[in-house]
Image 1 (cartoon, protein in one colour):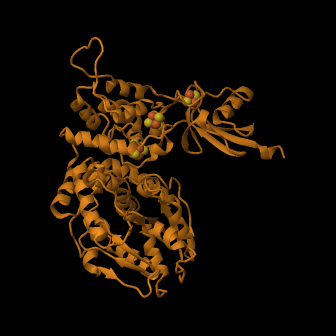
Image 2: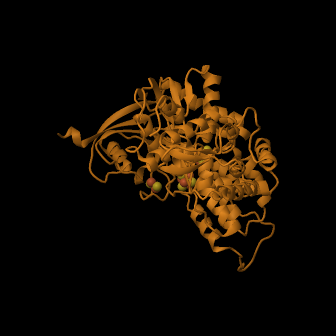
Image 3: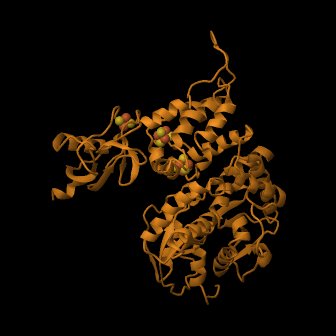
Length: 530
Ligand code: SF4
Ligand code: SF4
Ligand code: FES
């Protein structure tokens, strides 16, 4: 009875003065409601042996008590242990361990000092200075200045992990440095040398190594919209004439010249299918926004999207005048190119008088959901009635699992699923693909380790900082191989191409990369529409 109320806590232990290597020690701790991880550590310290850990304020302010709990970076004093069971407590990742749970923050402090996080001014001022400081920018400044310097963002960051392990590839230190030390400098009207700050962002922070995966946002106790901030900062680098990188410029030029981000190699999807796919007695009608990669590279995925909709008696319109969503330009800070694409696409899609737009690319989806409303308001001071959905979101939440055509045949395969960052953290879609996977008879699903960690393709990193992208991608390929599956399901064309290349490069392409609509099409083979 007593045992059921307790916690079994495995704690990382390492004292380099006596231990040859780290080990884990287990402790039994009585659980009570409202108990924090910090209280668990203090119980162990007071009742068993002196383990080393840091804390100070005990109220989530000082940022001293960061640790990994069950693989996730948290503040120990603000994290409640919700139920009896098992806990694994480890030091923050991407730091050298000094002892047990205490990590060496000195390199971080040295890097902060190098960035000169104070005002750069040519003259001393005396007396009161009247500042032109818009309220919105001042509020943002104060918010960002409240960063706890806890480094949870660094511990969660796939790019900082590469920087820690292979500093010769990138010096990227994690979000704290651009949020706390540099973004505030751009917002401060007293700061004079913004050119120098842009150079620091590019050279000292390696700003183009951030994949905008939002892992940092997920763990940040201040809930800062960190990747959005990085995109804004990349805009400052572009304005200063120091960026973006060649790979990004190539995409942006292509969009400006052709309306698409990539070159045509084979017949595009838009030329393979008619503009309207009619069905008898439709239950709904949608527009399909393909995105550049599904149109030009992954046509089979586009056909799968159309097939899944058709088999569920949805009339599909595929506007021929659609263009690139503008995401590759926006993620690298070229907002004007993105804005022009937004206005063009909204105008094309509004012509049809149909409100629902379905897409198979989370990068396009995020751009339509987050960037388009803002751009449209800036240019035309209005809102659009178009509503956008990712294909799995549409099938599960609009058609509904109970109304879906389940005339499936068995698909005998063992699969795992990679969460695309833009789909999971960007648009909150992660349950829907899993629900569909579980519906297909014969599919055996195994969750892989780090299923929601970036694959290294996002944020223009594959285009601009390939060595960083490959390091992050290898970690994803390792996790897929460790899951021992025949196929990995990937709901994003950028992740699809990256993961396919990484599995090929490091494991000879032993695992198949699939879109969920490929499997749905397979399961529907021979099935008629309603
Ligand atoms: S968005 Fe991802 S890569 Fe960029 S700082 Fe955050 S965790 Fe790191
Ligand atoms: S940005 Fe957030 S997670 Fe990172 S150091 Fe600041 S408060 Fe901590
Ligand atoms: S002890 Fe200060 S934030 Fe946890």
